[in-house]
Image (cartoon, rainbow, N blue to C red; front, side, top):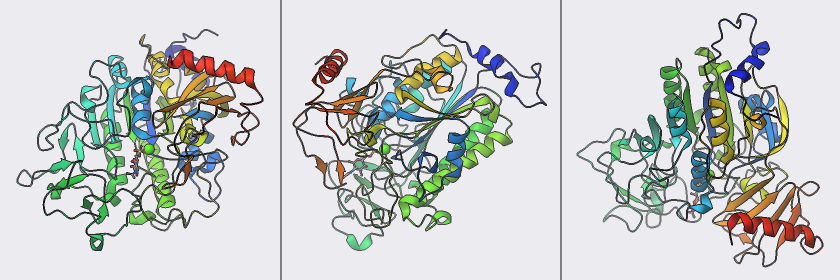
Length: 504
Ligand code: NG6
Ligand code: CA
């Protein structure tokens, strides 16, 4: 099949799908679609009803799934956040960058200023580019003054607009930054941030349990913000601190504003939601709604946000000219450091679906995530078993928008993304906290790794074993049967392939 289908042809091919009040004459065949990436934080393969969850209903996310392409073999590059986000935006394997690990809130910008990025590429194709939500890719060059303009950041690696939290909801600084400036900062109450030590006289989760409304289980016992103990120390900036329960509304609103402002031209929006990462702080509208505690409640909240975003696209009349890709940065975790009832109220729900492991794990649930492509009127609904990674979105969007740029490790899977081709990748390197494994066709090979089999704190199997592991996902999606000892030829094939890619 000709892999160089320009977007114009896709439009022409899809004209029959356009509503009858639109004719070929009124459709601008030159206009590339808007692109939105909705990126969840720690949403598991089994956390949506479209992926089989029955204890929780996610109708708006399901709409994307049921009216778009629902991938059963869609991957984040990594089992943690910063590496996956790095791969998503650069199309480069994060294990090539030794700094691509879970970053503290004071980490310098992880993406090199000369590195190709998805937003830069799309900007060159005439897109207005924006990021709203969780950044967690570092800011500045080493020592950030949060009271001045914080650069470089998203705006220096391709985004025209940014409204972000610097790292995670559980890490300081707990403020929003708009285009590099802390929102709502009172200059007479400057912000200081440290990951080394506390500021004199400031309370901490460790020393001041009486001040807490959410207790820490492991880690998360440094500065207290809004009664929630965080990772890292922060002083000052009282007026600028976010209200955790309002975060979903805030990011939604900023996304809607970006869409409304740019609905007349092609835009790219990276909407990086914070749910269901800890601390799980649903708006009171969603409190208790899932019966599963805050983890379930924030999934319902996120689902509602997706519905509101779709409404905005409809209101602007651009739903049929917008490609939406929905996914998650890594797999699920139940207890990620706070006592928040997630374990106690989980009931029958299985956030990992039929997969083994979870966040931080080299087993499938670490990196295999919900992965949807939705383009009303252009994509015909289907379930695709094609192997696809978020790392492929750079090249696929380049192809879609007529850019000649290609990233280092991505593949052009535009036809796969649009559900027109069932043949995805053959091979993908999986990553979890700097350890790597290889998926090739239906096989997964995990090399021997020292380290605990289970992270007891989060109660997740990490995939470590002293021996090689080999699984055939075709009939063993739950990775129960290690075939390394009996399928030695296959093991050899995958090990050689792995070494040829990783160079070790
Ligand atoms: C871990 C945190 C965890 C979470 C994770 C990052 C502790 C003990 N655990 O270090 O709570 O913040 O980092 O998650 O501090 S991620 O989705 O952004 O990668
Ligand atoms: Ca995450």
